[in-house]
Image (cartoon, rainbow, N blue to C red; front, side, top):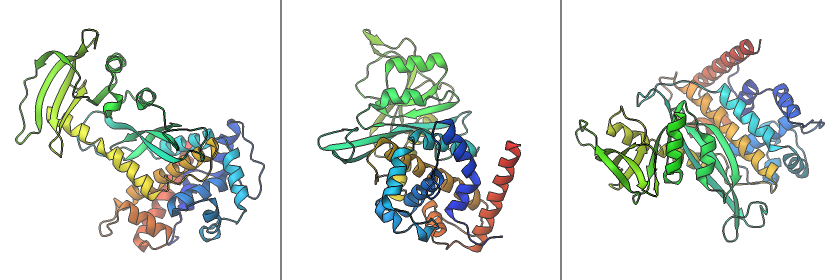
Length: 375
């Protein structure tokens, strides 16, 4: 059994060259390259994300160190611009489906929690002329539905940075989950629509929202509860009011500030409603992690394909590394590693032998499962 494992070994386990070829051809892209294929491009961007390369040129200086054959800078740049980014987006969705797992839900809820939010990546105005933003900046947004229980993105939508979050958030609806969202997604019509389709939610509302026909809910308050108010009501004025009644819970956050959330959940305690909303902070932690550790902030190319190919492959790297980390380290009693420590030591071949053993056992198990599913 190997006593070292590379990030490319993990990639090969979950995504083969043949799978990439099938997906690309189904979307109209036939890869005729022999020296630098689409699969090589995926490997390059995964290495760039994990190792923090600053540009294409910085990447080619390190290609041979990570086991990739050297090619010219222009070859990578042209490939990234030519490949339809919908291919890499589809591959990301395939990886997410393969890495889906159920874990213990700390809040003991019947549905998983999905936090919806967006993160913006900005550059100079001349870098992305198709994505003008504010002043002399251009940029893009990644709108993410993050599975809070598993700390992994389940769905991602890409837009230019000037797009508003609310309408895009409707495309991230998942009626099998409880949506947890900030004020940008609060909308009277949307609440009524959620009620109609059976979408559970906990969404923060603005402090100036009018609450009419309110009725106090009787509930046992927990000791040292942060809950200030727990009512059912209609939201808005007579001219623009929700058709349905909803629950509104007001509580104080970690900094003592008042927070009001609207929800359709009626049969859980107000303290649990507050805890659910506080879990939304994990999506901010996720954005911070990928920006600091997976090179999301550095956009190498200037075209839509180049930019979104890089970002979706970076997300593939995150999902693969996080999934491998969780599945491997939860079985280790005497080796304690954070995710970033795991990634850095994996890249530098400095993990303990025991960890490599568990990684290889895990990867072999995945290969066997995927083989059985394919047959």
